Length: 195
Image 1 (cartoon, helix red, strand yellow):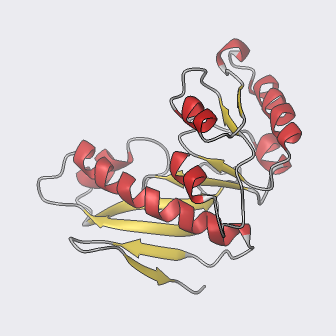
Image 2 (cartoon, one colour):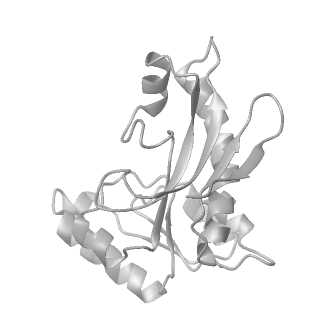
């Protein structure tokens, strides 16, 4: 979130209008306030298993902010088809795997256990299929012989901070051309992929 917000200045085609969290203790909330971005919290816990009521409240807060794009960043709640349909084509998410491989949780462990040569992250449009929307960008990192899930996660996170802002800039002007970032020991290489 912080990386996206800091990038949305100068010639960026978008500006942050709200940082919304489902956790009152989210570390990004005071950081957003420091950047002058309005914040809100819709704590999911009082709603229990009532996803519809939780999402109704989310929608009220979002509709008041009038966003053109919703960027999920560390939002670890499953969104129902009703919510996703309401904001269809306007929600982005970053996921720590090279989708369609390893949707869901524990992606780094799964990639290492599978013996994959590469791991990475994907920015995708959110649909009602978990981590199944169109991929708009991917960043790749090698999996090293002595990698642990934590070490791999740190390297992938560095690429997330490069990839997500790049994809958001393009998405904000209507460009959905997928972007691939890859790195070894050198600086990232950026390549566009035509569909």
